[in-house]
Each structure stands twice: as structure tokens, then as C-alpha cells.
Image (cartoon, rainbow, N blue to C red; front, side, top):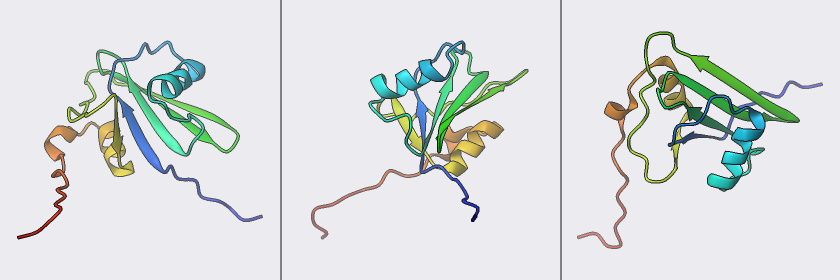
Length: 119
């Protein structure tokens, strides 16, 4: 039997505050209904409460969900402010930084530019 290393394909941060009493089913409904995504895809979905001192990560792995929860005792998570819709796609590295307390707003990458013609 070979060992298979699992890694998520994408990380999606939900913009709006979520009631932290929601468990797997409630968060999966948000993913399906509001984000119009499949909660069983190979992605991580990140949710925070209004105070931004608690986050939950919903992850599907092979045959079931993982629900990870982190509560900060004295600080707040710095939620990104460059959302263009209800969800923001982050890299795994950015998720690690967000969970570790970094403020991603100052680390925002430049927007990609696309031109039909060059001079």
C-alpha cells in the first residue's frame, strides 16, 4: 500500500461573519447555496465570526469532512479586505499566514493586467 499525501487544491475565505455554532452541515450549506461550490471538492473553506477571534475550516478528505476550529484568546484574525465577491481565493501559504496572525492586507499582490495589444 502506497501512502498518498493529501493537499488541498484551493483555499476559499468566506467574506461574511458566520455563527460559530454552525457545524459541518450548516457550513456545507453555505458552501453549496451561497458560494455555489461543491463542499466535497478538494478545497478548504474558511469561515470567521463577527469579532474575528474564531475561525472554522471545512475540508473534505476522501470519505468525510474535517472541521477545524481555532479560537484566539486576546487577538483577532486580520481578515483580507480585497474581496471582489462573497469569497476570496487564497494560496495555502496565505492561509497559513492568516491563521498565524499576519495581516494579509499589507501583503496584497499586484493585480494582473491583461492587454489586447502592446505598443
